[in-house]
Amino acid sequence: MRRTSCVLVMVMAAAGVSAPAAQARETRPEWSACSGAPAQECATVEVPLDYRKPRGKTISLAISRIRTAKPGSRRGVLLLIPGGPGNPGLSRPTTHGSRLPQEVLDRYDLVGFDPRGVGRSTPVTCDLTGADADPQGFLPWPGVGGDITESVAKAKRVARACGENGGELMRHISTRDEARDIDRIRQALDERALSYWGVSYGTYVGAVYATMFPERTDRVVLDSNDDPDPRMLERGWLNNFAIGARDRFPDFAVWAAERDDTYGLGATPDAVTSTYLDLAAALDENPRPGVTGNYLRAAMFAALYSDANFPLLAQIMAGGPPSIPVPPPAQFQNGYAVLTATGCNDVDWPRSVDHYARAVAENRREFPLTAGMPVNIMACAFWPYRAEKPVTVTSHGPENILLVQNLRDPATPYAGAVRMLEALGHRARMVTVDAGGHGSYLANGNPCGDDAVTAFLTSGTHENTTC
Image (cartoon, rainbow, N blue to C red; front, side, top):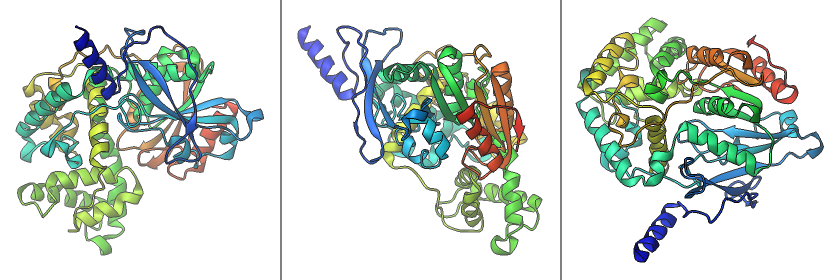
């Protein structure tokens, strides 16, 4: 028995999961230089692996900060919650701090973190192999004509790999757990309440935190909002991509039509749309070297995140080479594992393959741009763990939340933001920005929207505004 115990402790140490502490202790972070980000300090915070066992095994969260240069004006901390799920956030005090107005920097220490399972926090991986490890295939595009045979096979392989290779942490990665982790960060920083800026999936994390810990919130900015309806979480982060692409693609079509002399994609927006749909179908049957129909669809969706990406899509449509940027393999493996675990642990997904086959067929007819991808089967249909009960976002708490939302966001569409506003009720107001792309505050050059968010962070002013 003693040999077995020693082996288990060594395995946990190798995986970054610590054996139980003799007793619960409140410790302050030990700050030191942050590798690769000289303006930041970094530290770690120990949190429970399983919050049902608060004195059990722990994992580490990597946190960072940049202190305000004006401590006399300091209001508190501004926590920067990344999206994803699966995106790192440790460098955000540097990357996002460089864009924040000085009046915000004067009022707050900026705090970043890698969520559980991500980056320099205790990491997790499914250790995918072969084509399953190809970053270009992470979105579940159906096969030609909407066939999901290979999608089913991949979903089974990924679920099995995550269950076999993800260790104990894999079943303890969820939005509810991330909200609990954030409160442990708050405690470690000795802050009575947190202000935070959550982006994309980070808006759902922020809304869940505001629901679970309403009196621990100060000023909350939710930027590019997820639909918080637990029924919609069945499809997780993919749920609204079809609507988002439909809302956003016309911006690209107008842009390309204005440049028909350059790209030859059509002289009108309708013509550009037809060119895209016809080309995707043709590439399904006769792909170019490196460019299949689904490659084009993936390039389309990536391009919709920012107007700056439009030339990339136009060049591919005009016959150019494949050129979608992809993350390094290790970063993809880590991010994809956390993304998958979060989506699967947050809510139970349908198990029937026929359910997905019908959904894909219907979705392809209604939303031809995305060809059934947003409702296709994924690993969650075969996930080996039971999901947690989703948190229902509510209006209980202070009036201290400001949503900011682009009208034409491909990943988190406006309709979802409206539902987030409704769920938060009297607590929230929304700044609606007449812009396209993913990310609103300090992301698309709209002074009206940016000024409204800055005013809220610095003075607490928040009203429903259209910019």
